[in-house]
Image 1 (cartoon, one colour):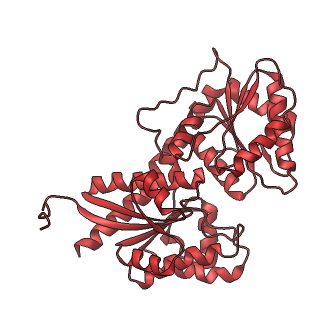
Image 2 (cartoon, rainbow, N blue to C red):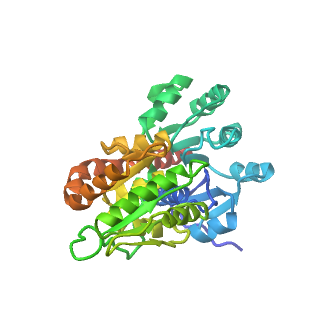
Image 3 (tube, one colour):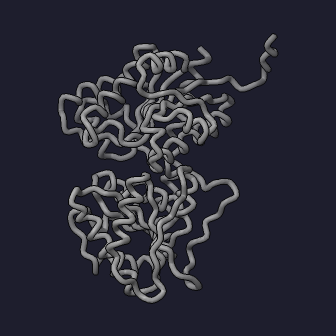
Length: 383
């Protein structure tokens, strides 16, 4: 016979979460971890218990990694059953509604939203980056699911402008930071960078293969090699998406050339836990990043950064810190890049002081979607 429910126990709200999860991409997994932590904290603050169910490419791995329920993301019958037993569905974060990575991406994620809406479940857009959308035929589908969502938040003004051009009313769109701005270090861990006077400065490096001919990696290696010949640095390559980023990092390492006295290069192996990668970044004195979430990790931990842009989302995030990309995958001046790196290594304290108000604001605003979502679901449950 089941035990009677405690009348004082928090009301449970079951929320399905849709995104690019379960594929061991550190950036996307960091988004998921940030959303889970924000929902848990906000549920506790509002007196409800949140029970997430993550739609994952590897449900068993996701359950083991985060200690939450997970379900397969591709089975139509399984998705129907999972969403039907939830109180609502979150779509995000990350760049889900774009067709640069494939023509099926927008129909898939919009289809998940539409399925939830057909089942009468409120849907919530959580700090998504929308676009680029090359196929204008997708505009109507995106507008349809967005206008029928209970809450819409995007991670930059450019995404809001794109939705506005598609016909989504601007007053329904909130612009908030990427949820990873709120990701904390693992419990018991502390950042150790910030004063490199008595040790070799650590330069964290997040590279990915973008150009098919590898010219971007060659240029990055040339610039990093230039820096490592000018002064002692510890080049620590951080693969955010394995195994692809590890392979790109090894290729760049092979092209560094002879380093200067006291300099070294190494490949980190932080594993799949996004908070372990965050800890890696926190221990750097400078972060050189192509991956968006490498730059977001650095900002959250007050680590000076140099961005290499391959996508508008890199420029959009850097703009929120009043920064510009130091290079792109199409053009990089090795000497100028090394000059910029040296300025940041020598002026890290000034950089942190200058950026602190901007970063503080982003971190405060990063939890706003969770606050709205939990509040709306709690109010709906009372009716």
